[in-house]
Amino acid sequence: MNSKKKGNNFERKVAHIICDYFKLPYNENPRTPLSGGAVRWKGDIQKSDKLKAIFPFYIECKKRENWDLIDLINPNSELNKWWQKCVKDCPADEFPLLIFSKNYYPVFCMFLIDNINLNILNFKHLCITFENRGIMILTDFLNIWCKEVRNEESGNCVR
Image (cartoon, rainbow, N blue to C red):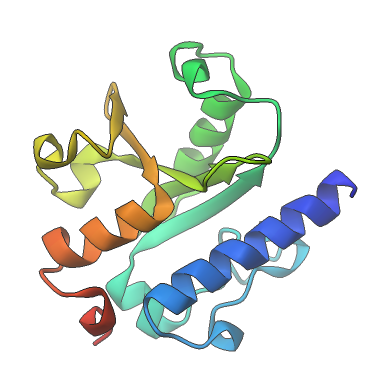
């Protein structure tokens, strides 16, 4: 599979994970055409107003093989370049969320710890922290976002 098709498939997968979690229809929150290059939408997932209200994150997706978690400490790594671009492109009214994976790995997400008002010490068993960033498996992040930040269960996280 070529890299563009792999990336597009991953963006669709992430959109489905998020929509399924919040019980929202995928057709209202699909991957962005042209992989985030469309002028109307920012990020790799088109978010409905409903999703924006409950999940205020700018989403950038990467499915590549040329990274490892140890790359966090290398400022010139692909992982850090993706993160820097995500932060740079993030609109002022959202928080950056880099969602990434590679073959045979779970789907991870990287976020700014300060942005989510989360006592990360309660979740140190689920989170890798480095500088002001946290990395978690995406589904763990979604669970914590609903239960700890929004004080709601996953099925009730939608307004």
